[in-house]
Length: 542
Image (tube, rainbow, N blue to C red):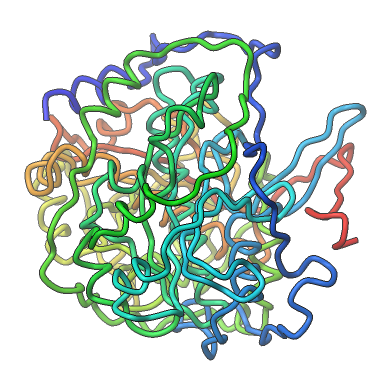
């Protein structure tokens, strides 16, 4: 735990000092946002023209994403493309004068996108007649075939099931550290959490389920995705293995939940193709990131049975029920400014909070651990609610623990039966929200902003130092739900990675490492930059 404390405390922002970074943007070394594998065969995916013409995805309203999704689509190339397009694909291209950049379905700090995705599956008609490993190329919405391996090993690992796939997520630390320096490891982890939630909700759109697999070590994930192949990454930036998800219709096969089952050996013995592209010619080494990555390597863990989450709160805003799920996913944007005047009604505000409560719906069954992150809210303009400080404990146990940990006097008034929201103090907290969020106006100009407080030391004691990553993953999942909830309510949201860590804790009088703020977020009425032009994510969507 000492290594985690050393990194976490060493990368905190303070009023008089920011975490170490280059201090300027070296545009000559800006990383390419897209990785490709030269020499790897390319496989286009639905909904590109002419691909899987027989696949007709069922329409789905937004609310069904949180209610086990629609009817399960038959496993095949079509729904795999549908899933990836609405989890990791491009959402738009923006342009200002000569500058042009892409946006993605899964958000990222600074739009830098350190997260890469790899698909591992058995033989699939239209992909290949044997099991394989593929890299997802989001810029082209294609799979790059990296490896072909023995189908029998895949069937053994999946208990004979042919309708499953694995998605391995990795992080390229350099993409974030280029701009954010030593704090970048944090951002890579909550970006990975956003991707987990995006995959989970996109799975629901095709009627499938997604689960993070805890038994798989990072070294096994690296072998499965080919990230440990030195020759394939000659002179290219390496990728840090993260989460492994099993996705498919129906229940999860027990062998996948229990661990490796010989699959990595079969993949290592497969026929590999492709060399990783180099993203930058020059680099700055951030050894602090290398140290925390090593200190938090996940050896995998045995969990006897799939956890059963609690039932969800029966509270949904009626205005979002008719929105199309896929359209809402693709139109999600990160706000750059709010108008500072508009408000939101109490009902949709509480509905947003109900979505982030752990339950057996939405993305929450995808995670294998119980909720460890809770919300400190700065409420500015919510009609029917007093402006001020609020707290949302996401478990019953945390309600008492947080109250015990707070070193200040508060009201502790329960707000509504639908969610366990607690009113702490009344007053205009816009200046406070702005100040603790690195003096950024966007934290004060929305309907509300929040800090995500993690049960820090208790989580590390229980699950080991590798769980430091998982705490950030949980914040990313919460953030992704809030992004989509804001979009469905006709508003916008954005994550805030820059905040003054310990001053946030001082708001509640929190001491030591019992709770730590890991991620900030804000929701409001957006002010769009009319100077920018927007095009669809892919040319065939025009």
